[in-house]
Length: 471
Image 1 (cartoon, helix red, strand yellow):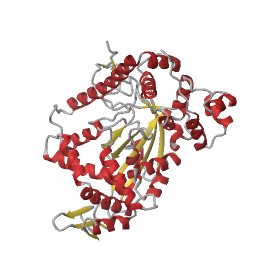
Image 2: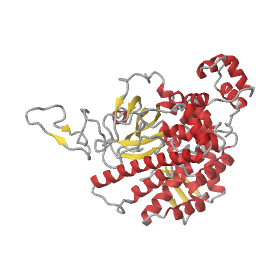
Image 3: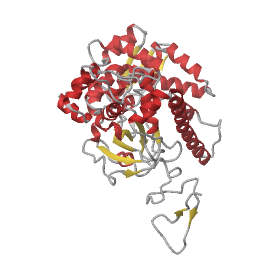
């Protein structure tokens, strides 16, 4: 079998120019000589598996643009699967390249098997926590069913995202994002909706029969703008939203209505933060949330949430996890495009920085964390206070968290200053006490569901029991 060679000189040169790197700097990053790099950039030499491995590790987002054909995508997927901490000994780039090239059917089956393994692990966590919450299959509440639907969709709804982006591009003109006046004009002229800003018990009130929209004037301007966008897409993209809801096959009318609302919220985010422009700007500022929210006129939470949806095939963003936690530690929003999965019932790990952020509003906290499988994450968390506009209505207090695996640290401004390589720098966290296998955590609230405990009446540690070793 002839060994396939990859020539990508123009793309590699474009990558280097886009990062503002000189040939000497790029050659140093790749561990090769300047003359060798020059030969590659002029297509005199192909990319070797070792160079592909380095590019994928050091430039993960840019590397996606190289992965155009099936063979290259297979190698990338095989490399990711083989890097799972499940495997004690990793394979070299050359070994993986030989498997991908000489045994493509085996490579595809290995990739599929690893994906099935990860899905099975997530389902076991769901079953375990569902049993702990005294629930049974088929008894999920409507909001749980909708949450799971978005999780299965990867938090990306392509048809709706692309339709919202097209609509947003017609409204925004030369600006990055549609202005509030443009949204109002479209609602009035194209959708025959009258708009009033007034004190209101809710944030948005739409009379479908009269075509009349009331927006609570006590909200911050970015929230008002989001509610305008929500109503606009709910009407303009009604057929697309209805088709998705119909195909979701949810059990109850309440679930279908909640999904419809969730899809309109999703589309509103895509309208205000059009995919291609938002992804481009996010990369240019290394995912600095404050800069992004100012550029696009959105809230801190809205910008975080949008970053978690950038999963368009061929144009993926950094795979982030995102969540929102209230003052009681309840996770009220969640999504993860990483290997990190959130507890579905009960509280999250108390060692996670997001809990501290709830109590310290308007301050960004950063944490290097490590899960029991050995994967490290950079987490950014910020406590937020959403004003109610009235003294007799308490403001909402919560925190949002956004994070990525350590491989993407160069793309995440909040990772700057962290000691990525130190063994002791990372906080040892878990999904939840119910699922965490760590035997020596001082913050453990209760033992893991699959382990027996040993109690010694004559000895008391911080946690009043020890975990029995698994058989």
